Length: 630
Image 1: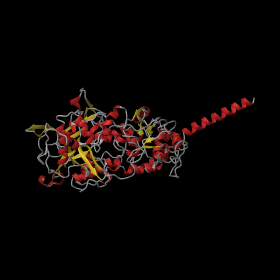
Image 2: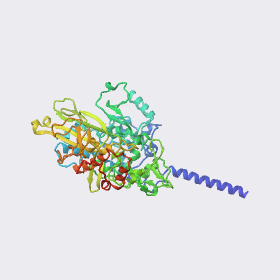
Image 3: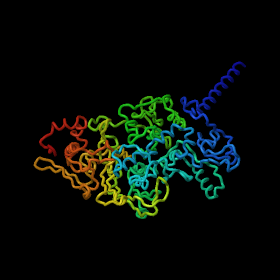
Image 4: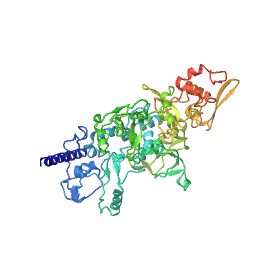
């Protein structure tokens, strides 16, 4: 009898422990201290709001935004005490999450996140405004800080209002529906709004019933961001989203590619040529697998340009010796919430921490034997994070070359951009004020294409790094059309390249000649760069593909003149700390290019150059070597 009682007691105790663990795992107990602390003590959530008298049995909410837990008014506001429709709807916000209402809606619970978002470049567009004002001659620095909402009506500001001011988080989402390719802005909705198929069906019924048939399925507000959330804005400008999935913009019309293979037409009818996608995309990884909430929402600091705000580097995951890591119990509040919401189970493993900022990548872990893995936020698939290859690790010559310089398969290029103001345009649209006006800046592009990236030098207090570059602004601005002054007086011409992270990563690297004897890579533009050997002397000869531009006598797509000691334009980049190669740097690059005329990439001579440097190898050249420079 005693043994039976004892067995029952043990069973009951075990059952109680299991129940408590299950309850704890699905509530707050497993989360590090503080992640559920509410800094706004005046908030009172309830499921007894009058809203639920009419809006009954709705589904589709995310677990952490269910009205049974937080009510309806915490997001939509309104009068929760009245059962009268008109009274209950007073002060209601139909589309919460726009930055115009975020302090009263999302920000009541997520004040820290809202502060970060409001100061992020995706909200301020500071870098875009700074570059535009600089090229229009309205500012003397590319690094001043601005906010897109403060634009006035100068030539530059009008240019931004007409062509650029659609893509910022402060742009209002004013219609119901999912985030798609045409979406711009929307504040918190831009990333966190998700419509299920049922929610989309119910929304359509609601609209077609003259808003009489209430939707039963509500869209979800959650952390499950997909690449479409990024696409609307990031398929413009440097076209990171389209590059990532292997699409290069063209000037073709939809009719021209009808039934043609090899092209994709976007929802806005732009026609793209299908090229090689980024290897991370082919593996099924999302943008947010690398660019976590710490980067996407920002860190609360103001930055001049996006490359300063982006902290993650390829070497954080593809490390040389061992990764920089952080334990679970040291996670910050934001990371802990993401870990909890995604139901990750690797609390006992170290996670990779980004070296530049220390923020964790909670979808990574390092196992007991030191192997690193990434959990795809798209489908939960497990991906090995391979360390750098032997050649990257032992290469002592290219330590100051960024990973993307060698591992990008292509990047977008556009040239021949002309901007002029049409004062008679009757249906111009102000993208910032969202209204029709008279008079509009118009942009005409001569050519969209793609190629291996050019190379430029990032040089600042952190050091000197070779990075990819693209023709950012080879453009004319007809200021006479805006100011009514003479064309000769105010026609502006700029030849500015921009630093670029193409997001067309491949496992394979570009070959040595594609850097050391490729004219476009060196900054001369496309064409034929030949090494002539005569009388035991070598000489480089360049024949450009494009005609010379009348403004500076350089080939249309060039960045710098071929081996000339004087730059045509000192302001030749969209950054103050980014420049083309100097003549001496060009000569050193072309010196290796001369060696490559005889020695293959995998030859012993080139291997020694990588390991010991060029100077040591040059000390052992033979009489058969014809070098180009004294």
